[in-house]
Length: 466
Image (cartoon, rainbow, N blue to C red; front, top):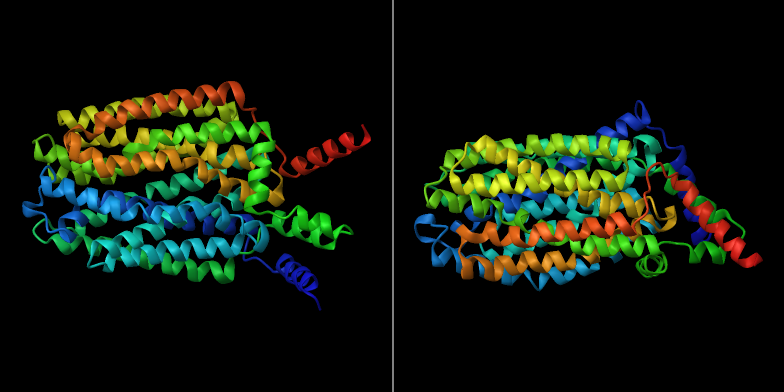
């Protein structure tokens, strides 16, 4: 039995594998739990950033406005910069899902997030903490659970189900605030480690459940079987996913080219998300907020974030991907003003939490549309994961901006002015990206994912006949 026959046999067994209960409902629950691990891991390092620095760098008096804190933040950011080069491998890694399947990467991603949290929790030196942070950063953008939902949900409910799953996961981020309030003791700078323990245990349990109970997506199995069992083996080989094929497809397809440009510009609008805890902590040093107020903000904002994310899917399915992105960015802009002005002026913490929840709810919902939904609905199944992975390359501009803020911003302008600088860059980036989206990108609402291949093949036949 050759390699090709073994692949066919494996895929047929996966197709016949029984599922517990109602297949899609069970799968949706499992993917939502995976999403919870993803979101907690994604938010943990930024939420706990000041307290980690206080401990690992032994900041005198835990003063966030001190020169020592600014230097420590710059040192940690500088240490992370070489590691971010590994993020350039993300498209190559994600393209494996088009070759080996969605399930293996779903499990590897979740295990990687749990491992990253564990490394951070046990780190005694900032370099070790940075390694754990980089592992989380590498696994975080893959979102294999979203591809699962896209390939199993009915097309008319695709965006709604993605947003519902993510909304539940985002609300769970409030667990970080609860754990911080319960376990973090300002008099013991090492107590931040206890906050990491519960998410690590949740991640381990989720991986253990996914291995036996989650099966491969039917869309991938059917497509892969069709390619392997087809008469034209060379064509099957050529149509396999992969980073090079994905990049070629992006640059030869007008729709994906402009989506990529939009993504590149839009990522500059995400700068505040890496430093919101520093902005809040800086407000305590000037007397605007108290430690208890910050706890309330961190616990409350995920609920607002979850509500906005929940509604975003209904907006996207009702008005289309483009119009919903405009609406969500307007919500995000209102939220960012509320958050920054509220933190500086000492507003009620629930209003500040509402502002930050509106900001990131609108921001990341738009990001999911630009980076996942639009490319996914514009790409054939055999290249879908590879193309979505390649889109992460276009986030590099925003990533470098976030790094530069951490490396130079706090030291040059001070933590108390960090939000204003981010605002001056974030809002123009939103406006420019929305203009490109509105006038250069086609709407994809209601796309039948199988019809993408049919349209592409029809175009090739028409070109051959001419």
